[in-house]
Length: 603
Image (cartoon, rainbow, N blue to C red):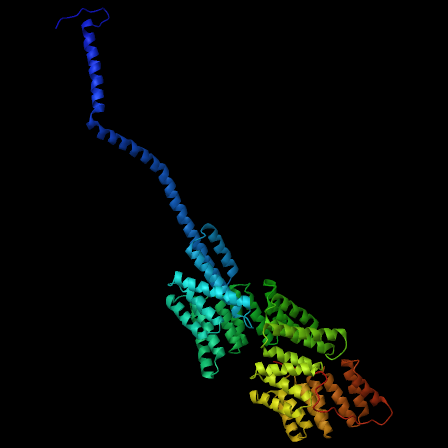
């Protein structure tokens, strides 16, 4: 190859074509490479490498977000489970449905469709229905039947959703108990305990089923066996949950109401309060114990404490009304009774007690008097009994109480209607037959009265008021031997609240046959038994007058006037004893007549 001369630039002219060829060749080679099909896999590989790099970079960022999401979901789940667990404990151990529901609402705000939250909420709502309905002392109203149906639907839903849980069986058991089907309730609660043998709440509820079976049993052996099973189940529940205030409460209730051991009952109620200082049911129960023991100051203290915790607790308001009534402070007593019917207008017992206290207030003012206060008290008593009958038109107690009041106010026709209704709806209640006997006697149907009082004695052989009523009617019927036999039995069985009335009646009967010394002894014993008995003093004045003891008769009449300053009979006796005219032996009041203000027999 020829050599080309150098151009002085350091480049040989003969090298220029070679350089151009080289550059062109390289360009063609690059074009060939890009056009070659064998190049595509390498391109894909590069794309994959780039994609992997991008994905890795994204994973670093997005993965942290995913992990964060998982962590937050777990924390939320744990929080919800804690709320559900706390809600269950607060409800089953503390018995506070309101606080439990509040916790579940907080959980529901985070997870509206969480199954655990929805199931427990349905369970508690259903059990609240049970608590509201199981303590009713009257038939269910329409809205309560609807509420019961909703709770039953929730129980069925719980069974379908989670058949392995004991909740549905507990709820269904309690609902059947509300429906007065204790045998079915036992089957459901047996299933609940089978599903969860360590569930103390289910065991406690089973104890209450046995208590109901015991209460309903007519056979004494069955009654005792069921009560024993109830106590055993309560002991078992206590062993499972020593800090359960509800178990202590029911143990105390069994001791008080069924074993009649107020001291033991008081211990259990105090144990419940030691667990929860604000346990209103236990404070009220302590008041009941004190009331049974006639420790009125202690009873008042417990009822007041219960009302400090829950001002609208009707049973505590009635407790205070009873305490003040026992102190003869009827105006204050009546105020608490009114508060009770306002707090729970659906409580039959609250209306009945208000009627009883209003009746006592009327008697204090003169039940058959013309004073405005007396008329208002009588009207309030009748309204109270009538309000109770609006709640339960078949309630024998309300008919009996209203019939007694009608008798005292001289409304014989109304008293007769109520007495017949009482016998119709409560044929096994001796009080119903007793008030019917009084109506017959008041209407001078003494043969019928003797029959009615005889039915009372058949049902209750120690019913003092029935012996008294039958004795009076037998006097009128001309059978003094039978009458005095009944008077003696009435005195033998006399309760504290009726002793004075019975002695006065027998004393007047003795005086009517000229047995004045025995009659006077009965009158003196009557006013000793009840120092505020107007009838005892007025009877003594009459008997002393019959004996010719003018000054003693005047003094006895004066004592009667101190109790009733405006009583015409007492004024007449005092005046005749003071006059210089020969003392006319006053004919003792007919023994068949009712005392001026007859006391309804204590129930």
